[in-house]
Length: 321
Image 1 (cartoon, rainbow, N blue to C red):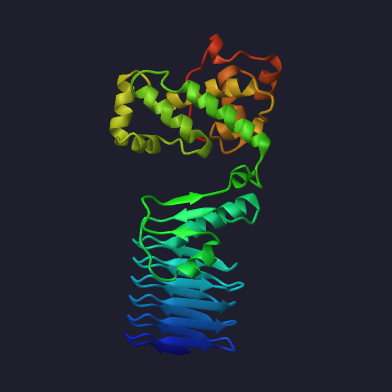
Image 2 (cartoon, rainbow, N blue to C red):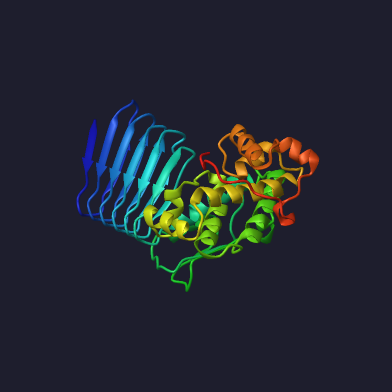
């Protein structure tokens, strides 16, 4: 195990480990340069409040905590678990393929912009560079390294934070996109919009919340009450005063949406069950038979009319998923 502590001056610390080991570097409050080449070691680096430059290479696990200065952290590790916690200064973090977690402090951190760029590259499966990036905070050092990391001009002390991308990048498709699922979700979104604000009072508010929550399956009384800023007891009492209950509102809404979704044959029964918040298709089949007296598949073949054509709704049952 190796422990190195710097002074409050400007230190140049270089660590090379040829075998697996544990290395801890604590710098002072000066402007320090720390270089660690540790092929298979565990490295912990804690920097002070100066403007520090930290470079770590290798395949071990790395934990870096920066101070409140303007720091540059360059992780070129090929694997391992890397965690960077930035202080309140203006920090720039460049991560290798093994980077797992970067968290920022209260400062204006350039790594936030880098994280967005890296995410967009992964989503599109394309390697591209922005045209320009602007930051509202000032930076007087490390500008050349910032430009190298971000691969575009970076302007500081501007009126707004912005990321300017080429139009060709804006038009790139999401590599993992599912056009069929997109059509289903767009149809679902249209249904959500058309069903909002159709019922008066608290019932209408409950339906609005449920419409958003259904696909997640989070359709419990306590969840909706919390979303509306009410206690569960008060929530239940107010619904009772309107002559209804949470289970009844949920059941009627599911019934109405189910009949509408069945009209679009692009929606499989499994997808409809998911959109209605059922954890398995069996629960959806059971509920649908209770509503209509038949199965969803048979109802689709018989073209049972949607609620817009006054299909009767049976009494509410259990709201479990």
